[in-house]
Length: 170
Image 1 (spheres, rainbow, N blue to C red):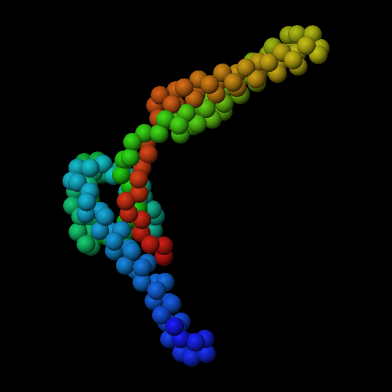
Image 2: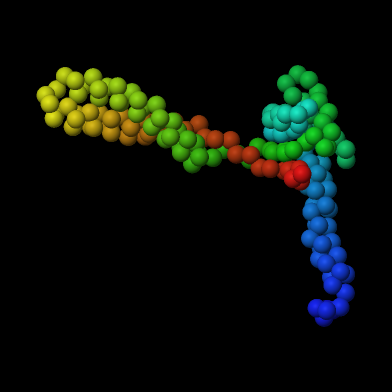
């Protein structure tokens, strides 16, 4: 190693090359991973079309060093490498994430219904007793809605996606 006083500019150039070289070469390696995808394999792809980003489910067709050919719906599309932002493949289902989403959806839908029912129930009861009744109705509907939502969400699950390629940030 050189002492600190000598060839400072050379040291900076070497450090810069060590930092940037893996990133430049790494993007090529990431793009090469797409070669392993089988024709007909279902993928999720983010790409740019004009000035907006599009996300779509597609079937893999052909990979080249410069482009990616996929089938979206009934049409074949060839995307330039520069337009492809991200490619992911199916990696199973997550029951835990499904249960969490279902729980949140259950709470979000049951709370207003419980609030409406509590407002109707509180109006009929004597003063003071209506607030307790309302709290019980709202609490019960939130717990019930969250529980049922979690059960349904766990049964359905959430699709997990594994990223195969992500374009370098510009």
